[in-house]
Length: 231
Image (cartoon, rainbow, N blue to C red; front, side, top):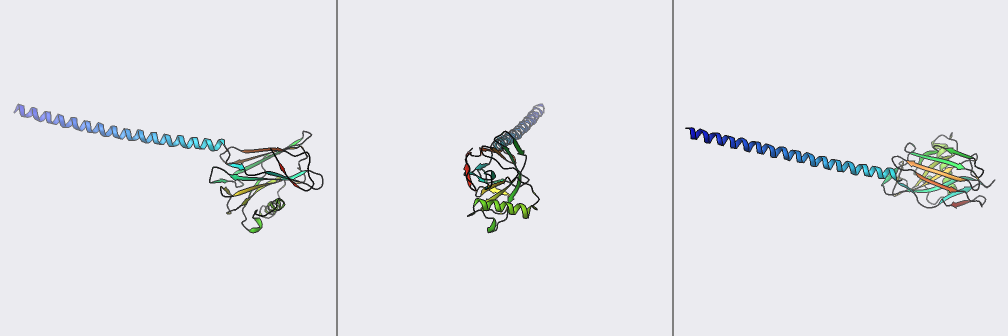
């Protein structure tokens, strides 16, 4: 009888040990799974953080061509400029009025200067042939911008002002990688730039570094013309 009881107790102890071992294995597996998930989550967060940092350290907008300035007929000063832009490395860039800031400063030859914190009034979203920049002259692009300011935005806007005219426009307020934008900046008659003036333009979209452009107005200007400038 005593030997039988001893065997039963040993069997129970063996079963308990097996149960405890299985419990440890299950807990270890669950803990390992949790650690792996935390590792994957941390890796994904690190990847997102790096991607976000890269976006904020570079601008998705790039100058896609030459910058041109318009010389007034009367006194050989610049009263408009056009900057070709394209989205690079992304599918699209939000460039609506609420997502984008365009700052402007003009330093004149004598040392006087004037600066504007934000002259941007958004994208010309009209898809009609009248507003399509393809085949249009630079003067016509300025006219398109003026029409938008006067009709769509009420006409009570003082210059300087900037609008984005988009080629292949799908009607939204984003510059897609398949589209090309022309940033039209109208200085007006009160804030023109003289020869050898330095014009600085900063274009900042959400969550990215600004695109900064600086160039000098040439000394020799041609009456009533559009002239190419270099940085």
